[in-house]
Image 1 (spheres, rainbow, N blue to C red):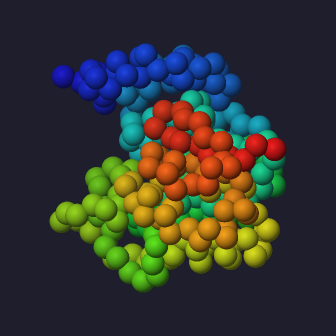
Image 2: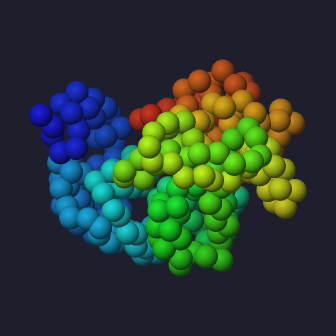
Length: 254
């Protein structure tokens, strides 16, 4: 038996999570019809694909969602605020951009942000490009995966597109380009001077990527958002760490 798309155990876990209650207030800040969207989130209601309108710090925005999983991700990013955002930022590297929800969040926090998106799933990348088209002048989108090597690899494709990963071994795969994390960091740091936000959500491949970061680059990185709990043993200790949901947020106090 499920409650919406969640098992009873997952539902209860959300029910007792204090961050779930904090997010309720955000529903009123993000949506024109917050009660409707909150009920749809809790019980996985709604028809898909669908266009959802958002209120943001830089004005109205809109995003196309394809499943209840997309809607939950949207709410985790915009309402529960899983990802840490420095008080001032401009340059973002988004590894595992999926359909563009996290990138959209950073693009709508201020009009000066620039986001580098990496999404190797072809279907997710296509949706990402559509969703972020209004911000095309503040984006660089790559269809490559990011890891600890340069070359090619087989990307396992999951049905919803949310959980596609280099770590999935199955019948549905697609070959993709892979770029070493240090090559990305080097190029962005040389151009912008800093990486204000580094987000890594590559469905099980995060630790391999974070471990490969050249120690000399950490001084230029202000914040890391990742679902990798083991990252606490890798990321330098001068980063403060906090958690919201499954996301660990590492940042330097200013």
